[in-house]
Every structure is written in C-alpha cells, then in structure tokens.
Length: 247
Ligand code: CAA
Ligand code: NAI
Image 1 (spheres, rainbow, N blue to C red):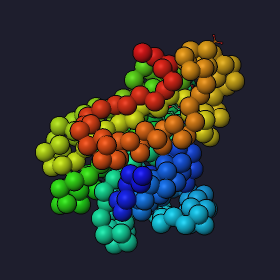
Image 2 (image 1 turned 60 degrees about the vertical axis):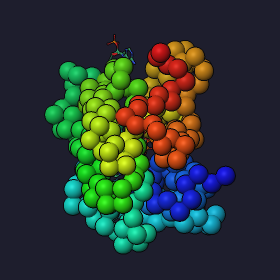
Image 3 (image 1 turned 180 degrees about the vertical axis):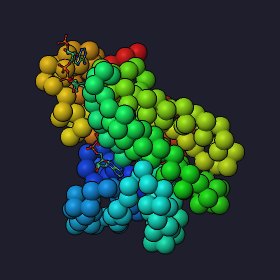
C-alpha cells in the first residue's frame, strides 16, 4: 500500500544521510519529492539515483538559514508541483566543542541552521498549507536536545528549541488542518556521527537497550508514519526513535 500517493513533500538536508533515505522512502510511497539541500553536487547525484529508479523528484538548492533562499525553494516547489503537502525540517549541522572552548560563531552557526532554519521553512510553507486547509510539518530534534550531550551546547539548545516550537505550532495550526510533530532520533549511522570519538561510541552502545546505533531508515520510517494519514490524530508529539537510550 502506498501511503503518500500524489503528496508533494519538501525534505531539507536530503542530499545524503537520513534526509536521502526519507526521500527514497517517500518516493516509494508515491510522493513527489523535493530534495532541498545546500550541497548541490550530492543533491543532484541523489536525485539522479532516485530518477533512475523511476521516482518523481527534483533537487533545489537551499540554505535553510537564509530566508530569501527558503522563500525561493517554496516558490519553485509550488511552481513545479502545484502545492506543498509535507515539510520535513531535516537539515542540520554540528559544531561540537566543550563549553569553555566553544566560540560565539560556533554557537550562532548551529542556531542559525538548526533552529532558525526550521522557523524559516515552516513559516514559508504556511500560506500554502493554510490555503489548502491541510498539511504535515515534521521537524528533526535529537536526544541531545532532550537529555543534553557533552560538547553540544549549541546543538542541544537548537534541538530542544525544535520541540518547543513544534508544540507551539501544533497548538496554533491544528485548527487550520495542519499536524505538527517532531522526531527525536538517537545516535544514527550517518556522516554526522563520524566525528564522534570511538570511545564515546562504545560507551553509547553500552547505554542503548537495543545495543546498536540507529540507521537512517529507522528515522525515515518515523517521518513516513507522521507524514501519512495514519497519523492524522497525532499532533504536537515528539516521537523518540533512539533504541530506548533514555526512558
Ligand atoms: N561523556 C563524558 N565525558 C566526555 C564525553 C562524553 N560523551 N566526551 C568527552 N568527554 C570528556 C573527555 O573524556 C575529556 O575528559 P578529561 O578532560 O577528563 O580527559 C573531556 O571531556 C574533554 O574531551 P576531549 O579531550 O575530547 O576534548 P576536546 O576539546 O578535544 O573535544 C569534543 C571535545 C569536540 C566535544 C569531543 O570530545 C567530541 O567530539 N565529543 C563527542 C561529542 C558528541 O557526542 N557529538 C555528537 C555528534 S552526533 C550528533 O550530534 C547527532 C545527534 O543528534 C546525537
Ligand atoms: P548529514 O550530515 O548526513 O546530513 C545533513 C544534510 O543537511 C546534508 O546533506 C547537508 O548538506 C544539509 N545541510 C546542512 N546545512 C544546510 C543548510 N544550511 N541548508 C540546507 N541543507 C543543509 O546528517 P544526518 O545524520 O542525516 O542528519 C539529519 C538530521 O537528523 C539533522 O537535523 C541532524 O541534526 C538530525 N539528527 C541526526 C542524528 C544522527 O546521529 N545522525 C541524531 C539525531 C538527530
């Protein structure tokens, strides 16, 4: 059964990692997918791979921290596919450092992409979703934002902020037919965790009841559920997909 037949989805940060798995999963379920990313080379390669498999998708370059760029993304999507049914706010970066060494630039850069970027994209799709009286907005938080994580003052602040914005928007937009939810991934095997020292990874695995890191498909499956009609009464939820690292 295809669960997103004819839906139009924008997935930010879809050139690689979790976002790319989500793009493939959404396309397999009948969605027309806009892969929106800062990385043009990887984004175009990813779209090529999906098109070769017969899927309907397009790459648009975006810097989610830049409002003009985000507005252009939404306009290009509407010009191409007529609407936006689903927004996945998945783009994110890390600039890890212990508090005493973290520069203001490192702090601000992560806030600009991971928090302000989610604000820009959500505000930009709003007129389209309100106009059609329906929509699904899903943003990617992190266990770091909910429980904290050594070396991630900036990232934890942004990811915690996403949960707060999600709950606020769920209250503001529910009556407009828009569901707003977050996914809270645990440590997931993508390039993002490659910078984590081996001894930290080993320590982490020992804390995860399922005794493994997540894989990108685990997170894509959660996006799919929240974007589908099966989740039509789920609103303001932060869905943890973390192997049970903290309960
Ligand atoms: N728990 C407990 N202590 C830790 C720790 C951890 N996870 N990580 C580091 N420390 C300790 C070190 O053992 C060290 O202790 P001592 O001073 O007693 O020796 C101290 O903190 C300083 O650590 P470093 O020597 O590594 O300091 P550094 O300045 O060279 O590097 C760092 C600091 C950049 C934060 C580095 O430790 C690091 O990369 N840590 C991992 C950060 C991390 O987990 N990032 C997650 C990335 S994945 C992601 O973000 C996805 C997601 O949503 C979860
Ligand atoms: P990744 O690094 O593999 O992919 C992130 C993508 O975002 C890249 O393609 C990158 O080019 C893009 N991007 C970065 N800045 C951008 C910007 N300003 N505008 C547009 N695109 C931009 O990372 P991964 O692991 O796939 O992460 C996806 C999301 O999941 C992120 O929000 C991340 O914080 C979150 N997450 C990841 C976890 C993990 O362990 N991998 C755990 C919890 C959350």
